[in-house]
Image (cartoon, rainbow, N blue to C red; front, side):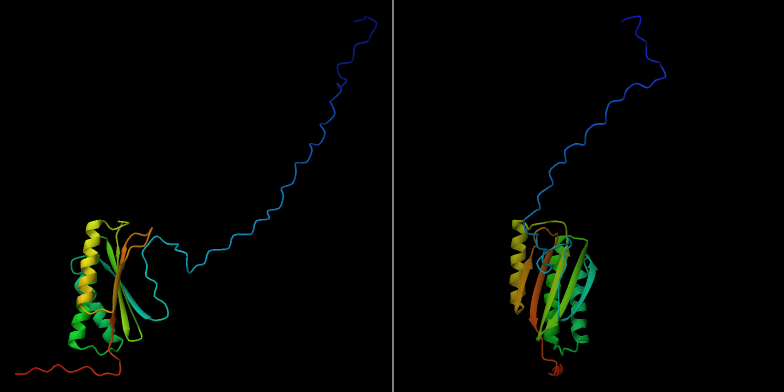
Length: 197
């Protein structure tokens, strides 16, 4: 450098670079032309993990019992007491049949080994449904359990039920067992038990 060229003063600010230019705006997303998904129909969607019975538009009663040796006998007693409370005139033979069906369903639920058992009873059009839900963690029945289910269904059929079945809901722990039996007409009087001596 030349000695005649003056040096810039140190207190003079240096020249600052110009600010950067605005970046080019990114392309805006194109609107989604796909149709919106329809919300699931609550009547067909299973949204719970627990086994549950859905009984609608009819009178019903239910009980939750512990899975204990006395549960089948208690199941039979509760079902018969409720039918009598609903004013069904049950003959002694009909009472015994209801007790046997309920106990058989309760014994099958007891054999599953869950912590509790739910008993559901509903009536409609001179028939009644008894459903016993066993709450256990086994998902699908094994071959041995299926054979046991078949013997339970044969025994229920032998007791004169109108319909019976076993359900293992996919993805839900537990087993549903049910039986449908005919009820006497409410206007029919129970036949008195006569003892001949």
